Image (tube, rainbow, N blue to C red; front, side, top):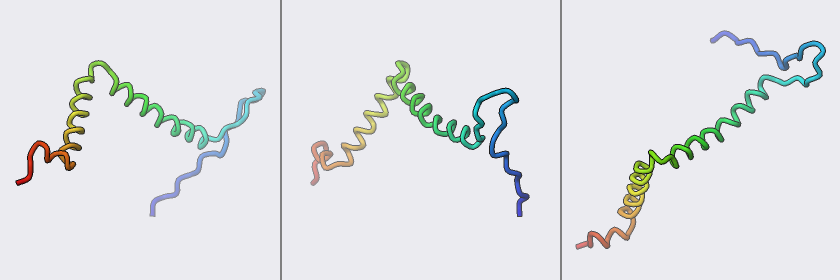
Length: 82
């Protein structure tokens, strides 16, 4: 059985004389976790739309269209059934 881990304090105390509200470590960690997906989507969008990646994006897109076409019944236009 693994040893038990101690729980972090439920809130942090502000320094004396400060009027700020206390925050729990779990809520600040949750806020950071919620911001991560938007940064991931933003960086993915920037990568796809970057000028130096234009050739790769076109190649991947054309490959996807070709696979979709060859997997459909429209592929019989290129190679008729015997």
